[in-house]
Length: 196
Image (cartoon, rainbow, N blue to C red):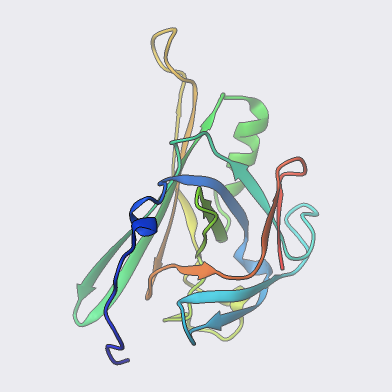
């Protein structure tokens, strides 16, 4: 790959809002196809999911709606022995410790995940799916999936402290996260994100 151009920024780039609004999750074993679009950007223009995940439905992911200021996506790239790898980390806070919340988080524990995160600017990013070092043409067998790597539950100590769970989902990939340029429809009433 050759250097094609540099980057310029505008005032609109400087005025972007930080943080994540939604984290959508599905088992990566449900991915049947993905269309990488490298023509003019670093994106997936389509991701096809089979039915599953407790009847989420085809092309549908379960969403976690986040409290403002509690969700982030960070990426750290390191080069070892000539190979650049990117650790992609999603961190978010689930307020209120309830048995329903704990059950849903428990279900993520041993599952290979693909995630679509949406920031407050409406941009979607895919974590747990990669075209580089994917090892297989069958996406369900992709070894660059994400996993829940941390869960911290706290009641707080003082009466004014928050009670909730901090969730960490991580994946190691051979490229930066791709944006999702297809349509991502967040249906918070149903708790689902429909990809099209």
